[in-house]
Image (cartoon, rainbow, N blue to C red; front, top):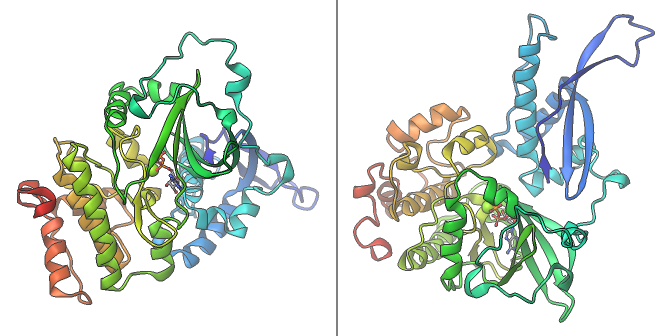
Length: 406
Ligand code: ADP
Ligand code: MG
């Protein structure tokens, strides 16, 4: 699901115009796009505010925010409206990141998500219609050993969208041949290739060329492509995002946090051993399988090089664990992942990321300069490993010497 840039707001007369003659208010028009359906919702600021207040109470850890109320001044000032529109749009983007938010009945109503004419059919695939006309821009991508030249979208029944990330979407799919379920990640080539960093695709290819196999990394069965899209056939991991569980329970007891941290560390150590730096470990990429083991998704498939400028603007909805060197845009290496492990562990134990602050700029400043604030409630061992992982100087960080062995 994704929300495109909201269109210019329109001012329309209030419906009880006949009673209060000149009363006017600004209605924000937001283009909602889900799968292949797109529609507009028109909402007033007050409606956003109401939804925001409901959600804030129910999901205090989600760091949702909307632009502040304006008490004085002209509410029709174009600059003001523009700013507010950007803020409201961002709020909406954050809502659709998390199933627990977009499945909330108030959110669904607000976005008119259940209106029948918006039901998208995820199986519908443009490729099959447009594959005849070869686009000059389309490019064949080397999918490495996982590439299966015989596979095609019509091998699957696409059942529903289960995730949406920065580059594409992930669909639950049933393979017609054997009735098995898979998570199929679909990326638009043109989006991948348009991103200014052509090196993404290179990075992706490098990962694809390696045979990545580990119990705590999502398994890639095979991949294929059409003129417009790349398809990755992955294990369907059905235990939900780790942080969905964390949000429900606020924090985990230490033994549980230790278990997840150990599995994540093991996966990271393995990736490092085959020269892959995960770099942006974040809550939404840590899934649990049906028996409760960690499964990391999204390693190396086109995330390499997502510029920090992209991150800063969408930060509140993307609690990414940014290491100081990443914020400073300095070179990074394996040790960046050990910072992220520290951040995940911290959040599992305390319920909020380290250095957390609603204000993003301040949070960045805290990550760079503020000493780690460790509150009581965890063991000395946990305390010391957090300090060592969340060490600002990557050369002194736990893992700097012998990586996983440390
Ligand atoms: P992006 O690179 O766009 O962030 P991801 O691979 O992280 O894409 O997938 C987006 C979301 O889809 C994930 O956060 C997760 O919730 C869901 N998802 C991804 N892969 C799987 C999978 N194999 N099984 C179940 N859900 C998945
Ligand atoms: Mg992701």
